[in-house]
Length: 153
Length: 415
Ligand SMILES: Cc1cc2nc3c(=O)[nH]c(=O)nc-3n(C[C@H](O)[C@H](O)[C@H](O)COP(=O)(O)OP(=O)(O)OC[C@H]3O[C@@H](n4cnc5c(N)ncnc54)[C@H](O)[C@@H]3O)c2cc1C
Ligand code: SF4
Ligand code: SF4
Image (cartoon, rainbow over all chains, first blue to last red):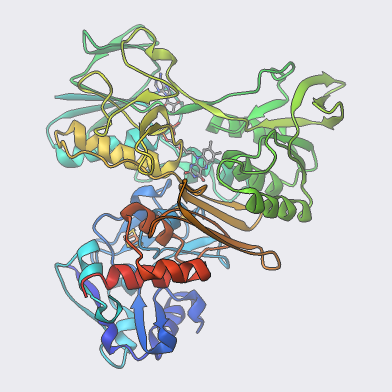
């Protein structure tokens, strides 16, 4: 059973530790703009939602890639982008209906959550437990819907 | 059960892989007529630009990918289909019988019917062989005219600039990217290209080409002419359907398929650039000629051939491209519908543009320039038809809140 990132927006205080940890782990710099997890603020910060790829079952990004640059990591189930194979065509960025693959203009390639190889730094640093890395059989859509955001009916 | 797939592009290959996942016992043969391992046309611009080696265009990288999956590959051209015998004829005179057949023969580049287009100095940019010829014949500094600034033309444009050519673009329509961008967006792209040193002539028709003293002279409709060393033609493509004449398989622009991607003949399917299949937005049969549709078709056709009869809702027309650093995308009914609502915001200083089209409170289409973060959400919203409720009004005053609208409406849907 793969583990996945379980996000509970109600616990998020918008401290942005996750964005900093993600950008540092993956891009080597503290820059939220290069983070693969993004905290969205509503009503001037009254509600905040950390948001990233759910490693969905459908893997739209992987199937749309013309050069097999996105593959499934057999240990974590993460859909990972290989920078050396990616040509930067961005087709995956429009194919993912969750908007969780982004173009990185500094590399000319794309970036998405890869679960840090099984030790996701966002969950590691989150001080409130809003992001945890747990065993889960929830997948794709249902997970997106179930990690409900009650405040925003 | 023997499945025969004609065409080794993304649609054919993905169908074969899907079939194999669903059935371990059926035999699967792909018949493809290009002299290369299965590759992606989409990667050609990156080969031209020198970003990747030829292997970088291949669809699959593992050495024995196809033999490991027990997918047979036959390097031949299919010349005819005989549904009554359930067989296809090959150019070597042999024939292959099938139980189920997938036609995934893609499209070919076409040239405008004007004199002089048969010169060896006129190039297509559609196949790996075209790319080889371009790389061989064209040198940095050469004067090159790009005929056509549609979607493919604008992608090729980027590669031609990276090849350091002296480039002039000629486009018949009154703007660049006429079929995926509106007037303000098209203008923004043209201004951007010109600022980067590319000469762009929209509303210009090439009416004749003449080869003289080792160069070309291109005459335009307004009587002016342009001298060039080479022409790269990106003036359209046509589905590869000629071999179907007399087969009884129905076609229009492409092979007509229903929401099971099946043709009018049971057991014969079509997928990818050759298929005129259901469009998600209109419900009509359309040829999309884009990678996401080809790969989706491949998966659906593979499942159908394996016996899963789940109907397909149709594919969404969408594009993304990078024109000299300006990133443009389009989704669905970006030109709107009667009685719908529209909002557009344009920022000329930062070269950003976002246009959203609604039917009631549902997003049905979008255009974006300069949007690279979370852009897929536009697909998500159009594809799932999420009702935006009160968020539609907020988007009408600030379309940049699209990601917020999605999170609120989708993730909050249970509350
Ligand atoms: C330069 C370029 C850039 C592109 N960029 C993009 C992009 O950025 N985004 C995007 O969405 N799309 C892009 N496309 C389009 C995309 O490549 C196509 O939509 C995709 O290749 C379609 O896949 P397919 O499998 O349907 O057809 P194809 O890839 O065309 O494959 C069909 C195969 O069938 C073979 N075949 C044809 N007839 C026969 C026959 N009778 N017998 C045997 N074999 C046959 C063909 O030779 C070919 O190998 C681009 C295309 C080009 C050329
Ligand atoms: S990036 Fe999008 S399509 Fe790819 S696995 Fe994540 S959610 Fe799925
Ligand atoms: S941008 Fe890279 S990973 Fe995404 S589809 Fe293109 S080649 Fe594949």
